[in-house]
Length: 224
Image (cartoon, rainbow, N blue to C red; front, side, top):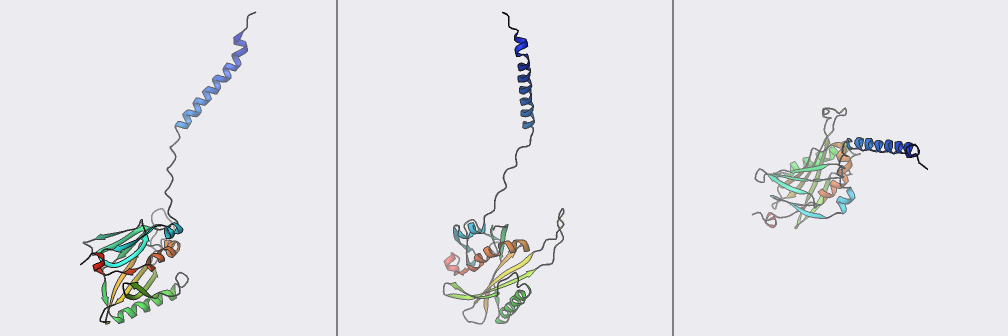
């Protein structure tokens, strides 16, 4: 008996050939697909930043110390005349400028308190109840923490955006009485480039940074 292999296996051979050809086509199309985009880095959460490792961040030529996440850094410019604090927050990167200290009179200090009260009356829904806090700064030093807050007029939208960007001025002034009691030494923590949206998202976390401020004599910081 002679088996006609071609007739028996012919349709099966054609099916296998078409199947293999389809696989090649699928593999060719798969090879032309663009590579997947790398995952975007996730930002730390408020809980991670508040409960994570913290460091005592001294401000170099300014006798203040802040308790911050261990990823935060302090940088100095212009031979120490300009101090900048930088670090991540849940919403964005934070920059805090620390200008050189200045001496102010009791009248100027009172004006700062009055300005703070005006700010809080105008933005009560965005702020705590008081903008002036008596502060024990450690090292047998006490002073006042005065918060100033204003919302800037909307800026011109960037290219490709339809909504104007609103920024805020958020400044904390630490006023320490001089030894003779006639003046105050004033230090500032001034947030830079802070949008209103970031303020709303990050203010609870950022207040923990500011509330941690303490005074450290320059000799303890290694500055003569």
